[in-house]
Amino acid sequence: MTDKHPAPDHIRLAKRVAEQLNCSRSTAEQFIEGGFVSVDGRVEEAPGARVRPDQAVVVAPDASLLALTPVTLLLHKPAGFEAGLGQPGQGGAPHSSQGSRSQGAPSAATLLSAASHLPEDASGIRVLQRHFKQLECFTPLPTEASGLVVYTQDKRIARKLAEDIESLEQECIVEVAGDIAPNGLQRLCHGLSFNGRPLPPIKVSWQNETRLRFALKGIRPGQIPAMCEAVGLTAVGIKRIRIGRVPLAKVPEGQWRYLQPWERF
Image (tube, rainbow, N blue to C red; front, side, top):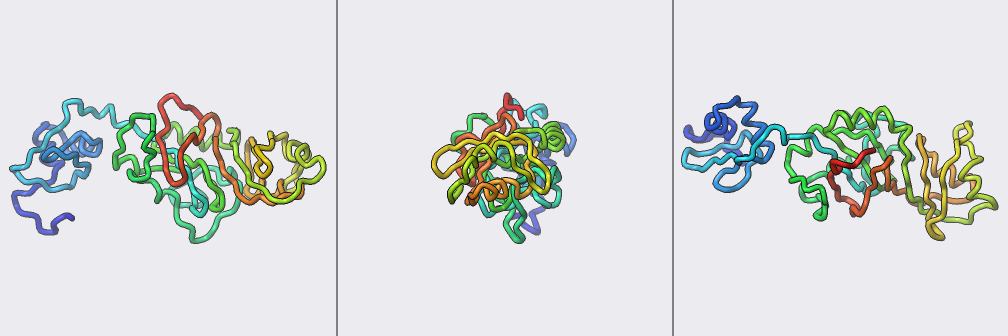
C-alpha cells in the first residue's frame, strides 16, 4: 500500500531510474512497466512506487524500448460473461456474434490477469501488468456462449478484426437437443433463411450424436439458435473454437494465452 505521507527521502521509482539512466521520466516509466527494473532484487512494474536511497534499483542490461511491443490475448470465455457487446471502449462489429446481450453480466475482461494465464503458453512472452491495459475487443460473443474472444493492444490487429470480422470464417461447436428433421443437415448447410434473407452455403457437420460443427462467416445475433430450431433442434450451448486461422487451442475455460508472432487471422 502506498504511504499517503512518504518520508522526504522516499522518491518515485521513475524519478530514481530517470536519474540513474540520465533519461526522461516517460522513458523511465516505460522501462519500469516493461519489467526491466528491479528493487532489491524484485521486479517492480509500478513507476509510482516509492524507494529509499539505500534500496538497490537495477535496470536490466537488456532493457530496450524496442521490446515493448503490443500484445494480443486469446481468452477462453466461459458462459455467463459478457464480451465486447456494447462495452465502453470496445468497438467492433456488433453483428459478428451469435446471440443476444444479457444485462448485468460481468465483463469477460475481468478474467484477464497473470493468475489466469495458461501455464503451458508456448509464446515465451513474460506476463506484465501493462499487457492488461488499453485492450480492445473486436470479436464479441454472446453472454450465454463460450469460447474464443480476442483482446488486443495491437492497432494493426484491431484494424484487421474491425474491418474483416464479417469475412473471417468462425468455427463453433454447438450442443443440441431434440430430433433433427428429415434432410435437416442438408438444410443447415444450404436452404435456410434468417430474418427474411436466404443464408449462403454454410459448412455444418456432426461431431457426435449431440454436437454439430458450424463453420460460417458473417454470423448474425441469434442466427445459429434459429437455424437449429428450423430443423427441429434446440441449441443448448455454443462454443467458438476458431476465428479465421487462429484457434482457441487447448486453453481451459477462464484462461488465456498470447497470440504467437507467426499466427495470423
